[in-house]
Image (cartoon, rainbow, N blue to C red; front, side):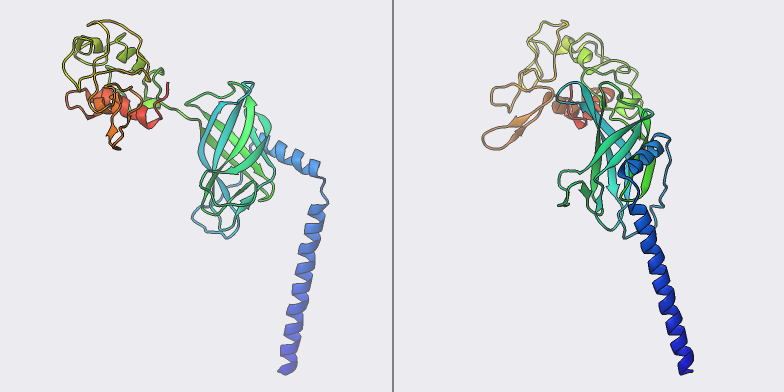
Length: 302
């Protein structure tokens, strides 16, 4: 019995040594691949949309970057290109570090860089800690992407030996100057405001209320504060921008506020923006109040 136990132990030891040696040999073979070869393979795979799918219900201790389904873009400082941020989350149990990332977008490969979002706790460069969010930064030619659109994207992650694939939506904010539609509002707009812009409604170019043009009620001869009263004649069409200061505002130090911003007075009290005032009123149309609420939520953009 003792000899059988010794023999079994020896077999297990030999098997462990053989398995370790094979794994080490595979790592050595992998490490001998030329870096440029790896990059070209990853770029090609990224371009043709190879995907690796994880089951998010299965926990793992390893790093696991996953696409969030969203990306945003904006013009670069030099004005020659657009910066794209592809949102990711580390769903694994260890920090995810990727010093080289290849992104496939618009049938082209782009070199990318992994960053953590503000508030992330990673101390290493190009890392996102477990459970935290980050983004992959690339640059594309100017105006390559459009708002409110979805694009097929692949992301090659060499350190994880993984290529992610997904259809990602770009940002779709409701701006002062963009038409009010389902995509930007997030729901079907009231027929009275659909297809119009906040700029045209507030400037009394078009009707946004059943009462008629804004300037029919809101003009230099309107009622007492806190009544919105731009310095224009009744029924006039006048361009009003979201950052224009307009009276007569109660609570504001100088009696004025803009549609975009309120503020604080010396005692620390907050005074509302005209958009917030509009939303708070019971006598304003719900369809237009909904539009102003979405516009504020999207950052009060022009």
